[in-house]
Length: 337
Ligand code: PEP
Ligand code: MN
Image 1 (cartoon, rainbow, N blue to C red):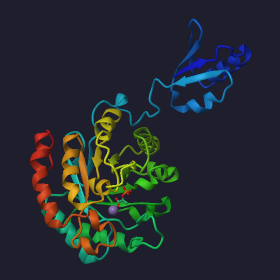
Image 2: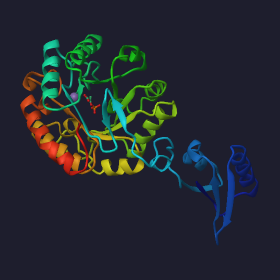
Image 3: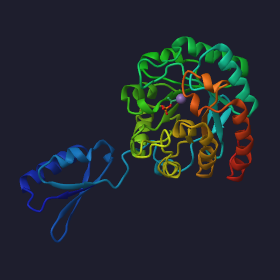
């Protein structure tokens, strides 16, 4: 980190600042330019906030040289992280498709969709039991009963399951859940991230509606700093000025996240598009951009779905997409098994 001092910086105040930084364990390398004086900090600057330093009267500017994330940083861990979920690997050339309905509605619905997506080659089943809805009057999910139905579909099909958690108090209910999803709206629920950091659960962390990639990686860092390094990142579309789709899929996020971190990066084209017919194109674009997997909403009766019907594929449409994806995934050097 480099601190640029103001030209007229008061010498006593500069000495105080340097003393404070030294007491925090930093070595200071000073250089005097023609007009400006620079303090180069050597040490773990992830504990420092540029904004806090900017509050000091003698500081003109602060530049980070090192990223503020450590455990998630690819520089610290050059190889791709590979996670194993119930015998299915993701990351480092292993590609996984997570599929299922937005919400768990009935035993028949979740079991039928689970069987269908399994037959099409998906290895992981999704379904929401605790739903973060914009309106308090919308269907909120079946809560604990929904989890039970999801776990019974897991038992019936052998598919590991992915479902969203909204509060740390619910963690006890998630014992048999294979991947705990932190939704876009909770990406910066730091209490939740810290609680998940104390577990060994694989966490699927979705990018917030209006969050930068660095903010997403810093949220992953919260989980990893607690000791849990089993994190998968998910790009699910962001808010832009465009209104013809639910969100705008940030394709560039995939290569950028993969250069910033070693964690698996997946894409959710369903929430990005919000429109069923667009999902296959976005899914294929994600594969081409280097994604390690996809999360796709599939419903056996999308027209009557209690949540996100317009973006849900029918099992037949999903089957067709999977057949098209397989050669593409292989073309890009990954395996879907
Ligand atoms: C979901 O996966 O059902 C969901 C609510 O997604 P997001 O948090 O990305 O909106
Ligand atoms: Mn949904």
